[in-house]
Length: 202
Length: 202
Length: 202
Image (cartoon, rainbow over all chains, first blue to last red):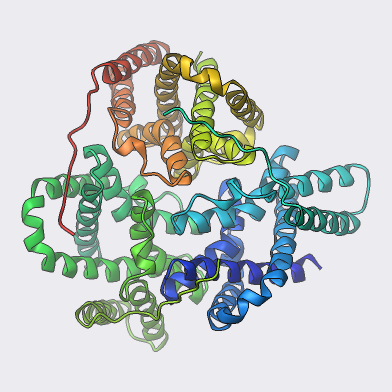
């Protein structure tokens, strides 16, 4: 099931990446690259940091086909994307939580410490967006907006805690998927934010 | 022959990197770093993504000497560089195509799938410039300008197709080098561009 | 002793990272990420470039606790940080030199060539700040300000030269730590700078 959600997630993330590139007036090639980086960059960064080779899309080049297809679809459907904004927020929230759980599962399978497992989930869930913003020459949104990476972190902690309590892996994933998704939607709905730190001295 | 062209290419790329840094008023150290990143960053990124260790310049530190020498030469010759602009475009185009072929050959030697071979060529050929622009705090030119990374992609596809047809490796390289170079020069001459994707919604 | 100085250094670097994030009005999560990247990013980049796995903080997750603690402390103490500016410059200089020596020692232990050993020190010492500035959407200070990365380079060269002359590892470290620190403080005091390269053509 996580596999199916993963495909939905990379498609959704690729589309948000393509729209970002479109806001920066990039050409079709730039759109495709930004889409691939947004959808697959977080997982790639995780694999590079953990030394977990080959990277997901190197072993499964078909993932690239999905993201490139999604990017091209986004440019074609762009005029209607605005109205689909609500659907996108849902897919993006689902993607964030699914990516995070996949990242946690991979680090757990390779025997890492709990802290590293949670960070692996955050790298997978939130850092595709960070790489997208760096390539678009913006301060990463993740560092400034409503709860996003924190949702990823809490999902990872809940996943580890439930496993520790003896809950089966499948139930864990389902519970965390639901809980993380709900938390993210609530954060958007009520504009929950982390406290901002403003420092004025030079 | 590809080795010789490689040395010409890293020298040319290092010089374009140094001029980029000069436009941003960097100091000599920044100029050297940007030159090294432009010339060697694409290949380094490819090796990190493919898990292909040691990186080229770690195994051959003399490559660093070439790029550093080229960077310093660029600062000395800067006032005359403007007039050499035409020669630079030629060297840069040759470098793009040579880097791409080298990237394809390395991924092919390590047994990767055709898609990954072409991407390996693109990472090698076009992403040194992407890293340069990220460090200079600009939106990567590659995502906005005339055909550049696409030349790299088409060169890689042609290389694989010719090999598949039974053409010998040496002839393949020569044909792709000529074809890719011609395509890039035509793209500059006639300002061929990819279609731009402009998305205005917030 | 280098271990103790290393802890002081990551704490100091994490605090400078947190203040940087505060200048960009990031939220608490952004502050923590930028602090971690500033303190641990240089060493991580070195390990990824050299293929030296696991990364330091993956093997020792407690390093993350120090940097996160230092980041939170910086936000709490921010109003008083301004007055501590002098102390910070000292700690940052100490951190730069200690990071550089640690980077050199790791590359030396894994049998790399002298050039690569010095570069390993520079990646460790100076590139945490480069990653910080890229994520904060600024041109890296290191490429523009007074002697910084050059201090790292000269420390590395002195370290290798003294070892070559038969000086014991401990004395080498002490001498380079003192010499590098003094050089950095002198560079700040007298505003020593590398020559700037300014190139105006388009």
